[in-house]
Image: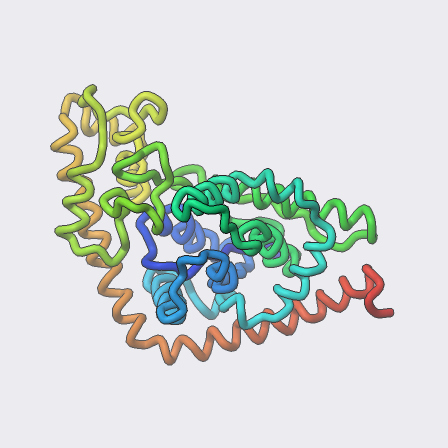
Length: 336
């Protein structure tokens, strides 16, 4: 029986949030026994953000690897590597760029959102090309390994759809070149929302940090953020993402950490007010953060040992993707 392949990547920008873990990292742990996994630290993608700090980028890369390990990812079972150490990603990126049109990129929702923020912040329209072309490099990351699934949050589904469109177009033009991947979106927790503005996704870059729980937050800070989370005047613990987005978001967090169903939470807190629910959730989050932080700092100390395996993983990915790239070169006429 052929084992199917899946891929995922996270940018090493700033601290990892609770939303990153529940939406992007936890599913990797659950899927590592089901698929041949390619998991990369998207350090090249991080360069598309003009706010990134060159002095701390490398530290953030190490921190992300340590987070992966602390959360339970097996660096020998899965192919965890740094994107920048596998040159074939950039080579395929250019080939795909020549087979993608500007109209497709301009329709990307994330580009619209992020570019609007840049204009509003600077007062002038300074939008990096890397931000515009970001989805093409993501397509290269995916198509290079002929994966069956791309593990993403709901906000990245559009990028996977673009990848599928590019792959289908090139398959039609040059013959069968790429496997058409499917997005694999976790049913719950794929989109953890901001605690202060529950209509927005919890983000590392949020201006109001009270809406974001970072995995390295102290228990006191995390508790304060949860207790101050926006809810509503209904004061009933009931899931309704439209009418009660704030409490619904907190319920999803509760569910994802404890593995309790939303229905169980509703029954457990039937007739109880938000204060009781928030106190319980704060305790759950604090216990989770303490356990994670103990493992994280242990992994951080052992990073020099783990780094050797990460390097081997990158060498493996480079070797198989080089062969794959040669096949693509033949298809498009660069070599015989």
